[in-house]
Image (cartoon, rainbow, N blue to C red; front, top):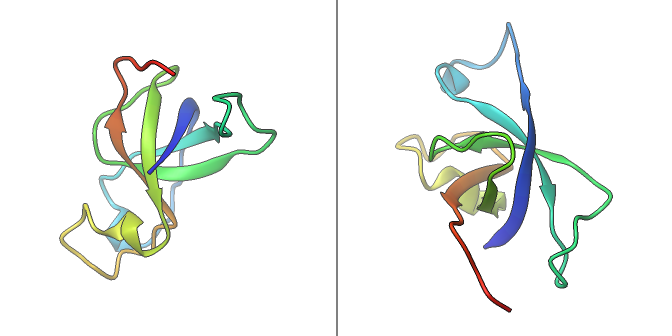
Amino acid sequence: MLIGKVVGSVWATKKLDSFEGKKLLIIQPFNEDMKPEDKFIVAVDTVQAGKGDIIFYATSKEAAIPFKNDKMPADAAIVGIIDGFSL
């Protein structure tokens, strides 16, 4: 699992049928020191996350696991909202 922060949303008027009804969010990954990295990725939301939420997400093949369609063409999926943590 990876940790990041939701920083925005993506709207798409045309997309694959498997993405219909799915919310796409822009997340900024955190590094090992819990500092934001200088990159952004788009992830499919599975937990009703919103802008400003600290989340954990899965990438690669694991990103498709939350969906019944195991051929979901997602590279990243938000799978949890973090309420708090300590280092």
